[in-house]
Image 1 (cartoon, rainbow, N blue to C red):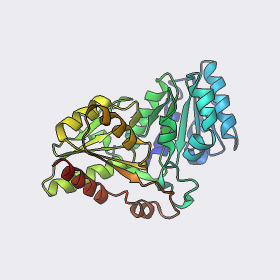
Image 2 (cartoon, rainbow, N blue to C red):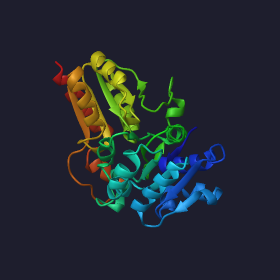
Image 3 (tube, helix red, strand yellow):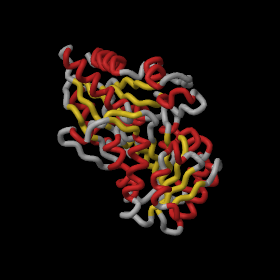
Image 4 (cartoon, rainbow, N blue to C red):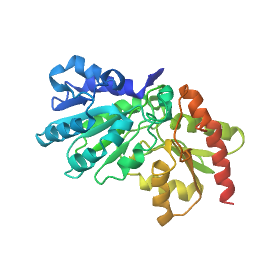
Length: 315
């Protein structure tokens, strides 16, 4: 599978393709089906699609009721509304009773671009990760997203899934030894000097950084950590022991996301240098997606610099 596709598009296509296989799958949207791409499912299965209007909190409550009746609802809206506006309902109506609802947040991170700071949700991993019973997942490309959607349909319990707006290269389908499993990271490149743990669009940038580091004689391991919670602690511990330092990179605040999860775990079992790469405790701003990412340093070059800094700390 070659080319580029936004993970939101891959998600929408996967829902529509899997609808026949899983008749218990129902999809809800908050008046954004053209953006979240749930429109593909709506066109194919209108009787199993519910547009709740601009009422995200109500949508989550309805989904909780459907799950209590044995169905498998996926709710859809922008990440800022899924994780932010409807937080109380996600926490109390879905996660607290452990209902089988999938909360899908599209347009996550800075790459929303021109929509600006109000819509660039860089706190969603932290908000959702802190809720008991909640699985948190952020696939890196279209192929991985399709695998994640079916895995989540078969996962019994609450989960948060982040989608991206911008088109991204597909590469996991050709990665040697690649396999997808919720709660398990995947080593895309081996290395002995430093480990780069990434998710979402930063996985491709991490691979690019590792290639640049290799040209400088630095051997970097790259791990695709699509599931932030539960964290693949076994894989993280192995990387810490074998490479001695870690860089985490994510399209999210450096507070409370993937970097926070890795630091929280390693500090108690194997304290090695961990440098977090992401958005440094500030809001986003409007602009072309690539320009915004570059402005905030979410680039392969910045990851490579972090990696060299991490290596220096272990000496």
